[in-house]
Length: 189
Image 1 (spheres, rainbow, N blue to C red):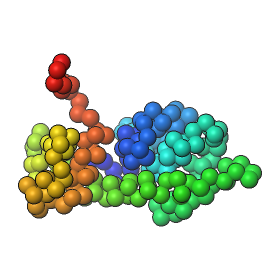
Image 2 (image 1 turned 180 degrees about the vertical axis):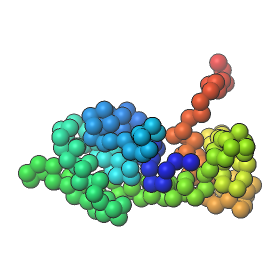
Image 3 (image 1 turned 135 degrees about the vertical axis):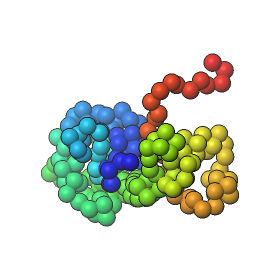
């Protein structure tokens, strides 16, 4: 399981509703720094979602130094303060990050809570693949059903003891944590 309140770059991109290349660019520019144990796992703090949204929306309007200044300021804020944050990146230039990123930060908070509450990887259960906590239901099976056209309501009907948030988190988790191994064969190949 991923460390609490930390997100992978793919999770940040999905929650900010941007491409992974936007997140990779801010990492390359050293706007954001990876955190975690010995930085072996590529993990980012929650404020990275707000930075990614601002980078997506404002793009080249901000210099790398502006982005770094904004990220430093946001790194000192609580998640609640991120939703109303305003950052002066230059004299008379204020970025209303809270306005830009409020929805994404709220989405990230809900996802992190659900991910940490409902998703686990246990050696000996489904080969250590991520599952819904306390079950043998893999996140890849959930993703497969939802990507195949099933609805969350259909999953809830089939698994009434599992809350909606668990299915939503499993779907996003599988999207942002691709399995290592043989690629799946797509129909028509």
